[in-house]
Image 1 (cartoon, rainbow, N blue to C red):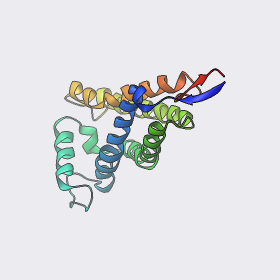
Image 2: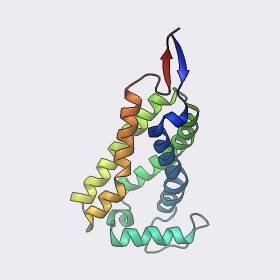
Image 3: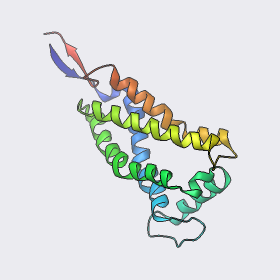
Image 4: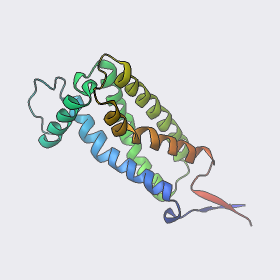
Length: 172
């Protein structure tokens, strides 16, 4: 049996994952997360060269109004941001390529990414509910974080079903 690639246009779930990876790579990981790495104290700082001033103001507005842990930035929180910047960012860049081109070697890496992402988000949401920096707007924060639960689950299901998720076996 020969492996035959499945065209991207016939993989709508993969298109949704590619869009998710793209948004995370360009907007979340290297804009929003960078803000949290370069500004240790959001109450006393000077605007850095990157990210843009408007984004910093938006992140701080969101944190002050809905997400106190984002503003408190405890050590464990910063560790999740470093994981995002050092590991998830490069994963997103490679995953965008691999999902577009249908490269089966991304399967195991995607399973690892999704597992770590689900772990991180579960820890963050636990803080949002029961922590010393619990959110006053829990529904809004859960909604804002829902995609980081939903897409890793989708990716896990997608990658778990087959050792060759972007191909099918053609008789012959």
